[in-house]
Length: 463
Image 1 (cartoon, rainbow, N blue to C red):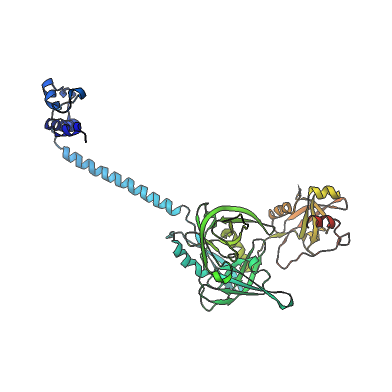
Image 2: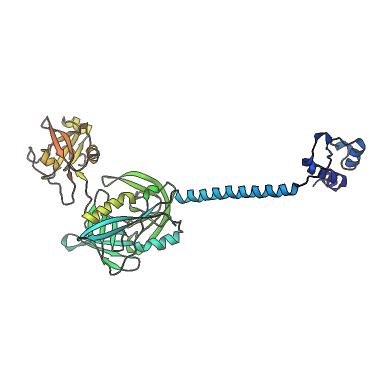
């Protein structure tokens, strides 16, 4: 406080003036204002400031008027104001709670399998979001890790040699159905499952699906097994936290937890020549994590960890199969042993690029390399050595073009193919069949005696 303020506050006359100003709201008539006369002004300001720093101040003096009932009005006004404020505050808070509860809170689900007449019937029970709360990382680990298992595989090699490998899996039901990756168990003759509690089980393969890289195992236990709750992967946002639990580098590092974020969603990746839609995360994914769990902060599994990008200059690029895509595949495998309803043309093909076309004087399209005997394409008259140039009225230049058209149709639909055979265009109507795991591609004879007329050129390009 400066000298002016200290002198101003200590002056009793000025205190009276301030009191009068505070009561200025009680003035009944503006005519009651009047100026301080010179004597009063000099008396009020005497000794406060020097003449050099004197201020020109105008202060109204107010006649004091007392109103009856002022206190009662003030009390009533205060009560009404308090009621209004409380009502507004309650409305806003309740709205905020409702918004927080309903926004980005995923709905969980649990797979259950019942036996009807000896057949497995799969149902997916939706778990309400009521009462769902964010969990701490240690609590998530304690909840989910008992449901993440080691998958140990043994494959018999030549001369009596055996090759071993390992991966991870996620228990989805109390009676022992386990999801993992197809590439984890592919080729294995013996599969052993181990839990974090030290239990060991012999596992059988219920079914597997190369297209989605998913497989389902079954173990038998005398007691119910701990199983994971499935989350809604469609509710994920880039920047959400994500946890991975798996068994990297074999059994020495079982139930390893890594923590990161969702780096991208709906990431289209080509893995082992298969196009897949993946969740990308920077949570560390290592060899042995395949088939393990990617988990949200509600303790729900929202992905099956599948792959990572490797390289000396690559870091933090892990990928998982979204559970919303995995669950229908898993359910179909449990119920039928394979994924039903997939249309099948029944051929394998090789892309004829522009360079191959010009070098061999053949049309661009897809060279039919093999045909399933008795399959849809075979029944339609397509032969090995044909070049598919049109499919469903559209020009095709790659196998992906045909697959894209095929996937827009259902089993039983007919698609018209136009093939080039010995320089002539031939139309073939293909009735799509259902893809089944028992069907295998066979190299059926063709007009050229089974010889690929472009084999030398394909070999040159690594085909």
